[in-house]
Length: 220
Image (cartoon, rainbow, N blue to C red):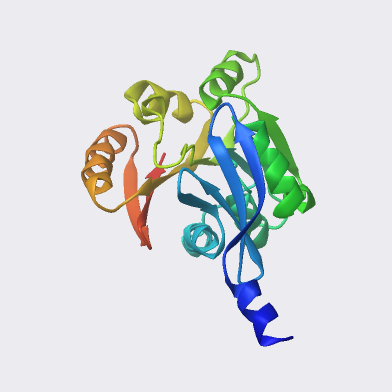
């Protein structure tokens, strides 16, 4: 490879743009010959995001959590789903994503379609959870992962006492809810307030820091 081609492969280059009515501009950027998804200036997939979920799901495994059924709210590019598949082979997953453009990009550039036992639902997660609760035979998940960020913003409806109580109704005994929360600058105080709220809904909470993110575990 020539020096010119080498530097070109290292320099971040936008290779695809999607225009979404939900997230606005979605960019796929190649950097060091690997794709990253950018929304609102935030990296939504790539080495950093993969590391967060590798740490997070590995922590579940180390704590002997049994995960056979998982619900992922905010599927995105599927980084969490890939790690669930890695640490829990055979796990059955439902991934809820509100933005079909994100799914389109994830299937094209991030191998989302290769994940086994993953059912993808394009829907507002609040609506989807309401629908589950109305079913005669409600499903029960061993783990529910909450990561519905739109850029830097997590919709407030996913951080309410009502929503937390709804999650407990579709969680198995000894199940766990995992919130991925930004944890830098102004987001630290937001996370601290939310920890107090989630603590009032679950028997035990544990925390795990990964980079600029904080994973909050609510054990039922």
